[in-house]
Length: 126
Length: 114
Image (tube, rainbow over all chains, first blue to last red; front, side, top):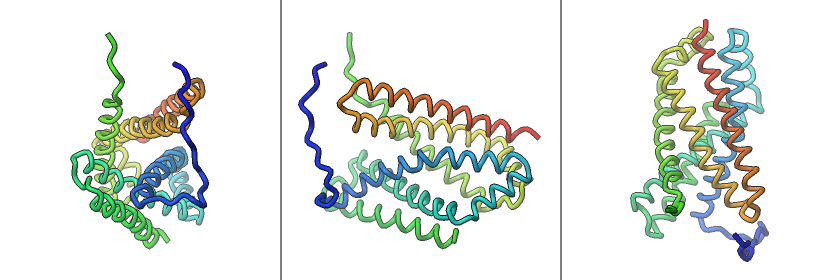
């Protein structure tokens, strides 16, 4: 198949203005990717914790360190946003909330809700 | 005869796996919230219960399928000009997911060993 003409690309972050729905959407994708990248690390901790009692202790020690705590909060934010944005998309599949005012409201709730999950997680974890 | 690729099966897999992930992860979190595993014995016991092991195995399968569809979408979107690059990236993704799958199941199986 012959190459189609190149699509225009505009990636100047200083001048891109996104509607709230676009923010929800790109965050949905980025958080999904983030969680995907975190998977091997999470699997390592799980494996360590199940190996033997010493491994369990070491896994616990790892998770109480600052890098892990910050990482867990970030992942909780990611999970919260990704899950809420996904539910919003499922509702769209059912033709619920598709009209623009509702779509923008839904996007706002997802963004706020996802961040709320992160804040709640921070209270529990920190 | 040729059928157009509509992306319908990917769409369905993504939705169904998402629903199972949400429910199974939620159920697991609820179980652990009600009965937190405070030591190794309790933690191992949790993963040894058949319902947990089976649920987790399916969760891992759903996770692998869900992330395949999602990351594949990203690759298709941004490696849109080179078929060769797309092929390489998608193959690497597939290989990586299979590796993760083997690892996930080895973890679950090891948990059932004393």
